[in-house]
Image 1 (cartoon, protein in one colour):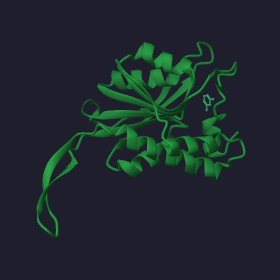
Image 2 (image 1 turned 180 degrees about the vertical axis):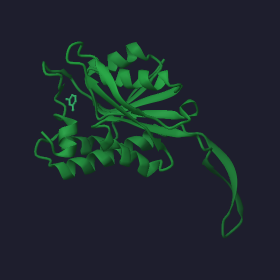
Image 3 (image 1 turned 30 degrees about the vertical axis):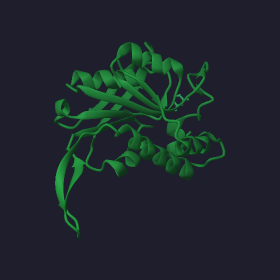
Length: 209
Ligand code: URA
């Protein structure tokens, strides 16, 4: 059974306040999302396996540890997920990056894939799917479906702000998935925005409207 982790680290919470603030402009918003993504990556990689090696220090040969080389993949959901990629890569620069693009079918209102490009060794990698906002959960559920369909076995989901509806949707469709969030907000409004949220993450990241 997957778990939901809410990162209540003071640095994450502090930066998230300014990310939410309507008066924060595009440049600062982008920088803050990048920083929070790094901080979250630090927490999310806590369980990466280590292996022991010998290292020659100026004093003597010591036993020490390095990452055991687990293969990781970051999967931003287009387009807002892109804003979190560089922050994660700062901590795990060898990770590969795949992309999943989804649009909402105007009739069924269901997310439909329009672009999927993944590392070739999907079955051997652990994936972190990233999207700043987990609203209804439709895109996250579909992105995880998409990865599983192509052979991914180990998937985590990471976002800045989640609505309870989105968390429930992932839990129902993919009960084994761990979900990492910086804040669990109150609800969705009638337009599908998270309340209080931060508005449209893609528009705020890219300066569009
Ligand atoms: N996507 C966003 O960018 N913001 C929301 O509040 C919900 C979905």
